[in-house]
Amino acid sequence: MSLKQLLGIVVIVLWLGQSGTLAAADLTGAWKGLLSSPDGSQAEVQIDFSPQGFPLYSYTNNKGLTRQVELSHAGQTVEYVPPGGGVQRMVVQRVDKGQGRLSVGIVGSFERASQGYLDQRQEAALFEYTLVPGGLKMRVTTSSTAHFSDKDLMVGGDPDAVVAEGVLRKLH
Image (tube, rainbow, N blue to C red; front, top):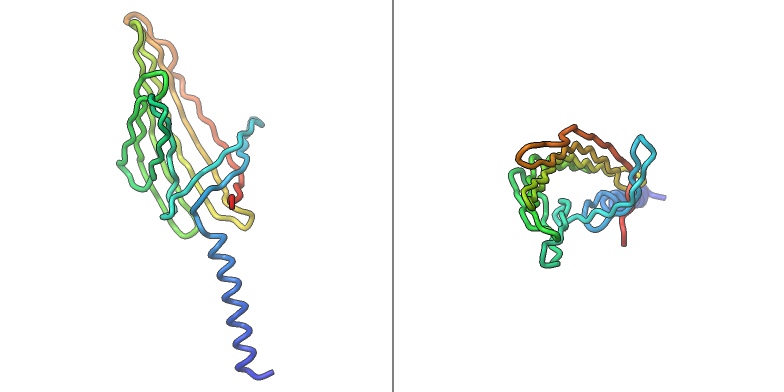
């Protein structure tokens, strides 16, 4: 075997290895898997990414219409009236994207007033995605507070933090 033939085989093997890596490193489409938290609770999740590699935030408004918004830049705001009333608002605080990783930090709030009572909830969430050999590692850290009040009394307000993580597989 000549040096030219050997180099040709090496180039083909390297190209095949890179094409497999590139396909695995593609943060697009739908990913699904199980997230677990330290308390033993688990939840099945599906995350959809845009063709540009950013997560899509899906919501249903009070008219029953489902919408998706690409979470791609800090300062981005999504505001809508969910089924049942009130106002849901979500603001992207930060987006950090690098080779094989992405993190998106959001702050959300929900408010609804009814018959003299006010229900308020705030939640901060950091979504971290890292491509790993077995798929896409996802870690979610949330912190939330809730207040329920009328003109004389406010209940709640203690923060509640949750961390969950797992490896998602790309759906075909």
